[in-house]
Image 1 (cartoon, rainbow, N blue to C red):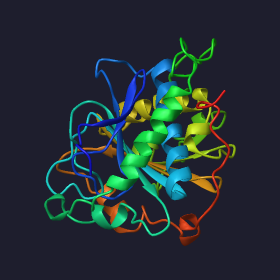
Image 2: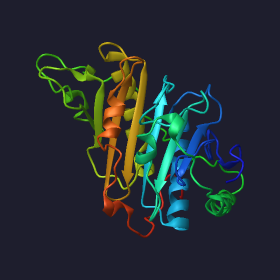
Image 3: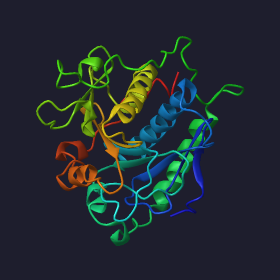
Length: 297
């Protein structure tokens, strides 16, 4: 495997590289170039761009069929870190685990304590081809243009949800999301439990072929909604973690977890119960889907 510090692609706000301790052959990180950059329309568009480039490259090169993505905010895994990769830096990073025929998923590695995990075998051939593919894609960009797609002129204002926490009249607590791109609801809430339960699922109201093909408005809505969940949860949880499973052109599921040291078994239980297991059909060979509009104009 090449030097883990080597970047496979550097874009305006984000960069793609191998992690220092890859858990599978399909494990990459998309890391923010400058940790002081706020997550807004331009950086969000660049994140979709980078994920789209990586998705298309691995689909073309090795027949990738799905990806699972993990990101945390205000949270650093400690101890056994069941269900999540160990953080390599405090800089915001998106861990991406791509799956192709014959490759492992992250589920098996992440059910082991961190100190018992084994780094994936060398993927040097994949990385060499991937580096060339991404270099050609970057070179194909017209001189003088930005590598990041421009943000829409009228980006949505990130206003708080009208009702991020359920009131007595709405025990499910999801009414504030009905008119948004994603429906977010608590997972297995107790009777009368509000949206502050600590674990939620998110699903798009309309079908989306892959995460990088969602609209910028939808991504910003979802991210801001997750911020509201952290703020309104009871007790308040500053840390949040998200796992997304992207089965291209089949389905998309997103699971959101509030984090609290000393009382943090939700993510462990989710992974141990098979929350990251992929259906067999998602690991069969499929042809590449059409490119993301955030990648090709």
